[in-house]
Amino acid sequence: MKRYIGIDKTKVKSFRIVKVDEAKLISNNNVIHKTDDIAVVEVSRVESNEYFEYSYLKITDGKIFNSLVMGNKINNGIANPYSFIEIHVSDESNGNLKPLTVHEYHNLIETLKEYIKEQYGLYLDFTEAKFEEIEINITAEMDRQFVEYEFLLQQMVHLVPKTYNYSSYVGKKRIVKQFEFFNKSVQAKIYDKTSQLKDKYKIHIDKQYMRIEYNLCKPKKIKDCLGSEYIYQLNDNAMHKWITNQIMKDLIRPIEEHIKGSDKKLLIMAKQEKKIDSRKWTKIFFNKAMAKKCIVKTGKLSLVTDLKQIINTICKLISKSNISRTIQRLNVLENEYMFAKDNFMKLAEIKSKFTCF
Image (cartoon, rainbow, N blue to C red; front, side, top):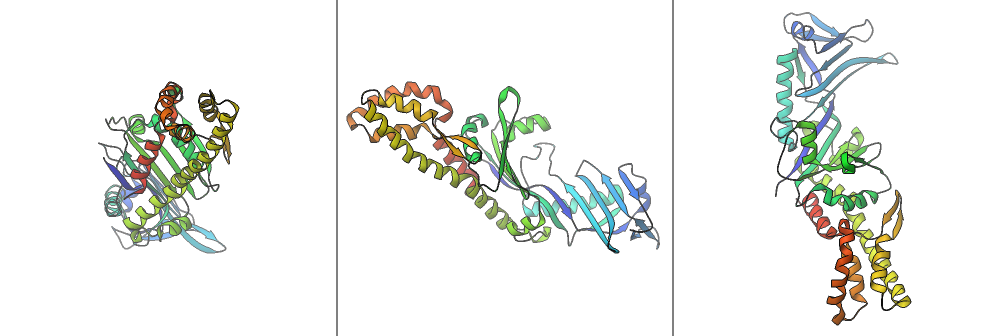
């Protein structure tokens, strides 16, 4: 079983230009350069003792990074220089299947600096650079196709804490490709990574991968979650601990509590049906339980997560001698609700692969 945990896309700020090869920079068609008389930044040139001036600088690359923007703003008469760069992780052989460790990310920054120097003539210093946004994910090889987890994942995402909103993306043939939950400082997704690699990168792999990713999109949130927003103060341990704990908090514990509460409600329902019709109550209870909904913050949610909940409830109310025969009769009904079969096994798999490191 393969699984990866690490950094994917990032947006970094607060880096600076040390010096500039002006001829190389200005001659590149990917560069937009503006200068005004008010908000000017001066940087040493490589080729002379004179200064290179800019008030706005943008590079659109699309290879090792998406875009770089630097400039200067005047607020209340005070100059405020700014810098942002959007960095993505991509490999020609496997797209971004494998996220980066902190060490690998720092190596990417060094590669990025050299690339920008050679391509655009900018000598950059990232010593005090900070994350404006950071995407951290866990990608795991799964035992089943993504579609087989759809019902369970839908329940899990419906039950995330009230601080989140929820949505899903439905692809072709009405197959759910992605679940999302988000607020102003966090954007989280669960999706079929194998399918995404095929659709986006034209990369075909014979294994089924699921990805759970969190994008921390506020510097304060990054500091609160990871201990620091500075790129050279991040460490793997802090990153691993945070995302595994967050998945437990957002996805695992709520569904486990839902299952416990549902078991109690199912037992009450079963006893009521048995009182009404002691001969046919098992079949009636089975169908009613599968149709039963409960109210959660995002609407109505199925009371039953796994068919075993119904079977286990019935077994509590019948004699041991009748258990085997009753279960055989109910197996026919199970075929009508395959989406709710083996979900406890699927939940255990997700918990093991996304929270235990």
